[in-house]
Figure 1 (cartoon, rainbow, N blue to C red):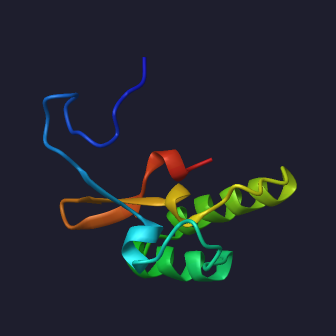
Figure 2: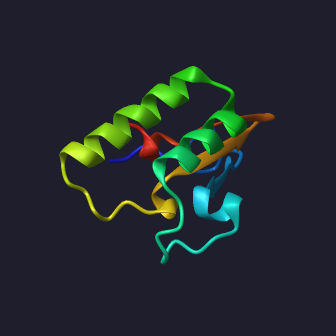
Length: 93
């Protein structure tokens, strides 16, 4: 069983809006057009939270050391909840 992160109070609760890095930057995830530097700047600009920056850094290190080549802009998502933006738990390591 998986707990939903895009709803408050379970399935019937308030929806938490989610957007991918691809959606924020209005770019296609099919083209390799963003790198980790752009992603780090985007995360800092959106969240203003160094815990999210640290989580993103961990994810980037994991992808590099695991030789993950399927790393594109739709794999990184942000939640907008109560005027606070943060990285989605799926994007966390």
